[in-house]
Length: 361
Image 1: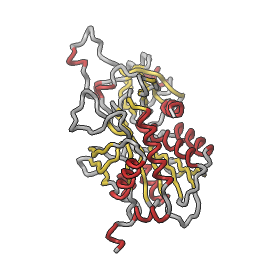
Image 2: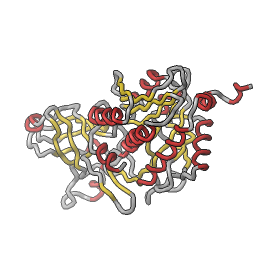
Image 3: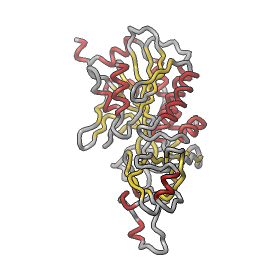
C-alpha cells in the first residue's frame, strides 16, 4: 500500500483541479474489476453491482488536498496567495511549492524573512497576507510568461519519505490515505460473493465544503454510507483533552464532529456499534473521538431522505501542513476493519442498519 500511497501523494489535486488523481484512480478501479462512472462535478465512482433492487453501501474518500491560490503578482515578480482550504500559515515559510500554471508546473518556495536582517518576532509569520512565493522571476511579466496567473492553484511539492519504524511523512496524506484504501478494498473484494451493491466514491472538493459528496450521495442514493478520512493525532504540542487519537493505535470511530456554525455530523449509532463489535471480535485496534471539524459525512447524512453514515479516520500528525506524519499499521488496521464490515453485509443487515430500532415494533 505504501507504493500506492506514494504514487497518489505525488499527484496534485487542489479542490476543483482533481483530474490527475481522478484519472489515476479510475484506471485502478477498472483494473480491480469495477464499473467506473463520473458525474458533472468530477467524482469518480467505482461500482460492484449485483441485483439493482438490493440495498447499497457507499464507501467515500475525498481526492482533493488543501492548497493555495494565486491572488496577486507584484511588479518584482513576487506571488501572493489566498488559502484554498484550511491552512496553518506558520507551516508555510520556506516550503517548496508547485504552481499549476497555464504552461505547466512552476516550481517555487514560500518566502521567509531572512534571519540576519529580521527580528525573530517578525519572522514568526501567522498572516498569509505577509507571505509570498518566489519562483525566480524578477518581474511580473516574467512570472506571467511562465504561465502564472491570478487563480492558478498552488500545492506543496511532493515529498513522500519513510521515517523510523513504519511511519512516513508526506503532503496530502489527508486524504490520499483514504483513496489508497478505496483501491485496496476494491482489489480485496473483487471476487467476494456480495449480496449488496457496493459504490466506491472518490469525491472532489471536500476541503472547501464537501461539495462532491453531496452530488455523489444524491446520484447514488445509497442505503448507508461509510466515510474514510484522516484525523489529527497527538504530538508534543497537544494536550490530551485536545485529541484522544494516537499514532499506532488503529483507526478512529467517531461519534460526532461539529464546527461552531453547526456544520458537521452525528454519526449513525447502529453503524458505529457494528464497526466496534467487528473490531473487538477480530482483535483490530480501535480508537474513539469527537472533533471540531466537518467531513464529507456532513453532506451525505442529510441527502435524499437521510442516509445513515459512519466515519473511520486514520490518525496523522501535523494536519494540512507540508509534512503530515502517519503510520502504516493504522492504514492496515483500517483496511482490515472495513473489509470485515463490507464482507459481512447482506440485505437484511443493511436494512437493519438503516431502520431505527423503534420502527421494528
